[in-house]
Image (cartoon, rainbow, N blue to C red; front, top):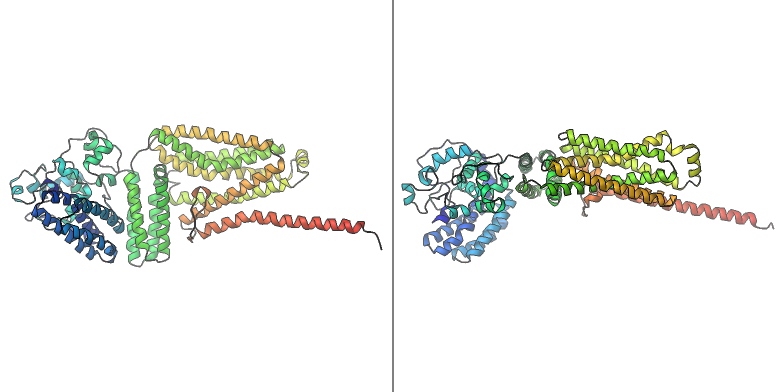
Amino acid sequence: MNRTGAYFLLSLILSLPLAARADDEAASQGSAWHRLVGILQYLEADYPAAIESQSEFELTEQKSFIAEAVVAAQEIGPAATAFLPRIQEVKARVDQAKDPEGVSRDCGALVEDLVLAGGLARSPRRPPDLARGEQLFQVACAACHGADGRSQVSIAQTMEPRPANFHDPDTMAGLTPYKAFNTTSFGVPGTAMPGFPTLSEEERWSLAFYVFTLRQPPCEGTPPSVSRERLATSTDPELIAAHGAENLACLRRKLPDADEERALLMARTQVEEALRKGASGDMTGARNALLEAYLNGLEPVEPKLRARSPELVNRLEQAFLDARLAAERGSPHLQDEGRALLALLDEARRGSGSAVGMLSVLWLTFLILLREGFEATIIVAALLAALRKMGATRHTRVVHGGWLSALGVGALAFLFGRHLLAGANRELLEGVAALAAVALLLYAALWLNARSNMSRFMGELRQKMQGALGSGSTLGLFAIAFTAVLRESFETAVFLQGLALDSPSGVAWGCAAGAVALVALVLFVNRVGYKLPMKTLFQASTVVLVVTAVLLLGKGLHALQEVALLPLSPIPFITVEFLGVYPDVLSLGPQLLLALGPLAFTLVRRVRTARLTTAASQGRGDAGAPLA
């Protein structure tokens, strides 16, 4: 019975002592969740075949599996209570030997939900040691499965069910390393297959992955880039469908150890630590562990993740904030938030290691440059148009010097700042740069607003070039242009570093295309601005600067919240990352005040002007009245 035997990784080896080693993981509640998942995996794969065979032995075996699943869920406790009705509903159908397709489907859905609820890792934390897996197989498995894994040994003939033949295509078609890991860990209820809690977690993973090399020829070449998470949860046919039969041997024999997955695994470990500390009442420790997971686990690989799936990165960032807020408030929901975060990290790991093609990198680079450069480009173009309109074109070199200097700093960051701009350093620099830019943009807005209300400004400017365009303001123009581009320059450098790992040429061509588009935008705004009336130009430029300041204020405050320099105060609201809008009082409140400030100022000025005009009119009327 090969389909059933596929999930019996180890046969009864009672006479072979193994080096005992305490395994804390097997004794933890996480181990109980894995056990329940493993039982349901057996049912998902075996139950339809048992119904088809109508073997009394097999049907009895399936009934014992589902009964064991009910007991396992009850042993987990309140955390699994919500799943009991679903498991019992499956049990009712299994006991009556009905609905094979529905039972298999529902068991698969339960597995996915239990993995999420338990925060389970379905892949090893370190690359499995296949050499160690081979040693364990020869000691513990070869007696029943044969040294080559074909189960052609005398003792196998006496077993029911027969030990799995790991060379059989049907056997391997439904097997994944994660299923093999669960079998090694807990055995198979109601059969001669025992669990091996004396093996460490790493040894069980090494053994589980080694089983998949038995029928593979030697690897020749380099395997495609596939994450450990994907390899652990994929069958051989699934890998063949995704990457071709010619790559299967290398995928099973050369296991990856990419920087990206290591970082995400580090984040996962820290989140698990946060959940343990939270469960013990150490909410400060839980909050610090979550911050460590975010800054040193997610942030270093965020650019590459965002290039593949910006929506997933946004969900991850929000999940980190939600979990951290639960820890700061001492909320019992920390466990739920943390498990949801673990599931998202595993989702990110499944896609990690996959390279982005040259054309995709080019397109992503182009979009990143447009997105990051749009705000800065509008500011620079507005300043250039205003200077040109005033006839102060000799000061344009100051503006050009400012934004070119910022680009130079960004280029240095791209070349040398991989570690300097990682994690908390990048968020802190972005936050400080954004707030500095807010101050300078407001200064520029007030300066332009003042110019638009000076009737004799043009004449004075042509005579002396004093006042706002004196030496102090020249430095101000440089600072405005510099800071307007600096933050985007930093962020772009970090994003492009991640993309350059996949395709340096794609980044180079994307940068060239983006630079052309941004220059065209500057020239367009500069030319259009020159044709506008001065007052209209200055007023439009003032609006642009204030809106940009509001945007950067939200981004800057949010960055400081992400490094825990500011607390979190979330409220029900929408998130518009591009506009710097985040659902938090500490960012939305200042943004609202800043946005309403110019409106209030304009309203007060109009009221004051109206009063002065009325007073002046009354004064003229009094002066013209006849004497009594």
